[in-house]
Image (cartoon, rainbow, N blue to C red):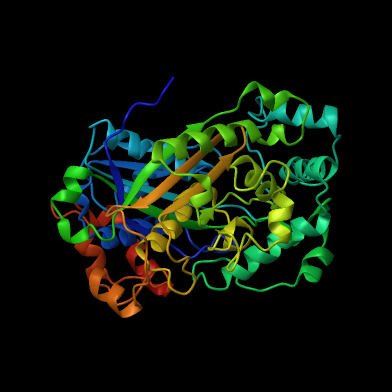
Length: 458
């Protein structure tokens, strides 16, 4: 069934926190508040103009979203709490876009945040069926079970199958991690900013062959946010059109029957990745060969390998050849994960998809000038959650032009903040926060001491 033509929806503002190790030092209320204030400052809007709020998180009690959003104001707007595993953040973006395209709102604030536990992901509701239980049973029936973390086994097995079918080597997966760690040095929000040689990556502790420790994303605490707006909202603010980024194509897909084909690659959602990519690219009118920058869900290097294939970034079965040629980094065919990806930037589940959005918005604006992929006309985002859901999004500049570098000084003048948030992670003052908090229905009791805590971290 052909998709219906959607009304234009734009990303007008983005903001994020630094991604940090989960040590319980920063609560989700601070992470969500910091990200949301930054996004509204970037969009140059006040919370009173926001008509719906979408909170994205996986770990936390019900209505954590209200706890975060009430800090911006208590304007009685609808607030939705979204949980879709690791694709939670981009699912929130998809929901916001759907609402605006459908005429339900002109401005939506999407905030993703996560306060996680150290170590590998774990289940909490052990008195009921696990939603990925049938996936785990298929893995057990086809590849067996080890003592490694479950997610590493699943994605590692997909990597093994890619090696068996297409001739990829263990070093190809290591090279993916090496590139992402190298990219992260230029991202001020990355959890890790250390460069590693391929040898160091390959000699790090083996988790589940071919995956070594430095090929696995860490758990993280962090927040990210985006302000989405309609054409009418943007037209009323013509001075902001140069920073607005169009969501030109987007598709949220879930698993097909091939999930249980007994293939380790299919078990990781290969079919839904292909389906979502084709639909998003078709809606955007973009040929995959014209994409120069992509934020891709590299929870493990093995997933980046199979997703390069699924998205059509390489010829079928030749993703490893693309890696070997250097075509996933600067100087090659395209740049994948200029942010450092989940492997090095970090992976606070509810925030990851929105952080990917922020990175690509900064590239299309020309603001990411210490890692800019120049002459970009379209950017691709891929965010995956087992269980399963995937969101693939294509972004373009609102003015239809290619990107070009904008100096840090000029960015600071345009946004009124005096600095470029794409290349420098800073906090904000109380007066700046008050600029975007509701003028008609704010509550100091709801804010509590969050502002003070945010200021203390910078």
